[in-house]
Image (cartoon, rainbow, N blue to C red; front, side, top):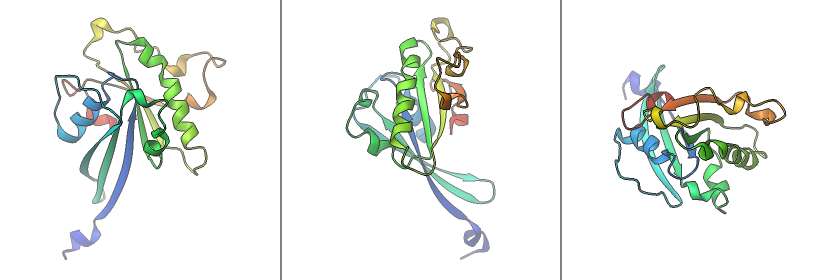
Length: 177
């Protein structure tokens, strides 16, 4: 075994993608893992898995397991098992569908509920998807859950990172992971 092989470290991280159906969760996962974009919509039933290995500075090999959860599962009996053990959660909404943005609070509540017994909460980021559709945008980029008045916003949602992406044109999906 060479010195570089001995020094390399391996780590596995689980990232769960949640949000309403047709918000682009599968496109985010597919763009990241396979560097591809499917032009036809196909609903995810239950969940789908994607995987990608990356090398981080310090010779750290990381395998990212991306769990693409079907949007219809918010009330599903398996959701807690899908979320359990995640180090990261991407809450995805469609910028052309205001209801998908409003429903993020429900998705986030589920994440918090599923992890309340654990020592640590996963890192959570909001992802406004389909950013190339600015002409049809109904959720302004300045409208975030963090800009609600204190009485309207849950205390623990104030520090979520917010990113915008377009999986169709690779704008900038790599920052999500």
